Length: 208
Image 1 (cartoon, helix red, strand yellow):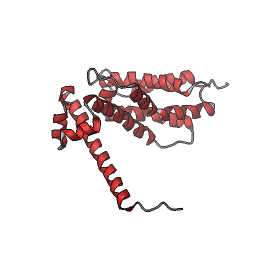
Image 2 (cartoon, rainbow, N blue to C red):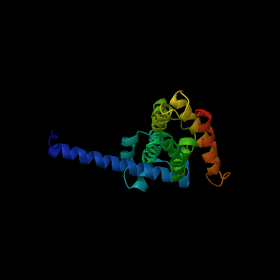
Image 3 (tube, rainbow, N blue to C red):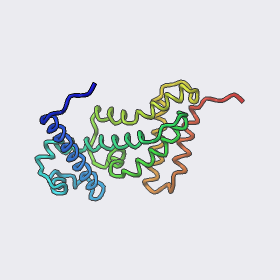
């Protein structure tokens, strides 16, 4: 059974949506680049409009106000992290898959410094994501919960709530990444050590 043709109106709406999404991504890229290079004071609607080559009306229509823009940046950062983790090739063994997600998360954090600073380092003073945004942000990391659940089912990890283990891994990873970004750690060895140590705490003891 094939879907009905879009028709002129459907094709127009699809093209309009694609244009809207492209412009939104462009505005977020401009904003996060300004945040990283010139600091939070540069995030004015006028400055972003000038850099993006559009009107301030477009930005107000799309994001509402500066707070709405900050929340959109916050969510975009987590969405980019989600795509990064989802791109990790699936393994037949869930523990191997979980182990591969660790380095991928670190790479995502280091590859998106502007978004990382907004998501985890309060790069915009006074910005507090809404509860809805926090819920959506955590949902972006649900792949960790899913793979951990598979590890529990396979007998690698102790039976417990997958999110409990995921949050412990997340906390360890964030601590190491923050120290690395601040220049206190020079490579990934400490990151690997702390995330491995957390995972070992939840692994099932194999009979000798």
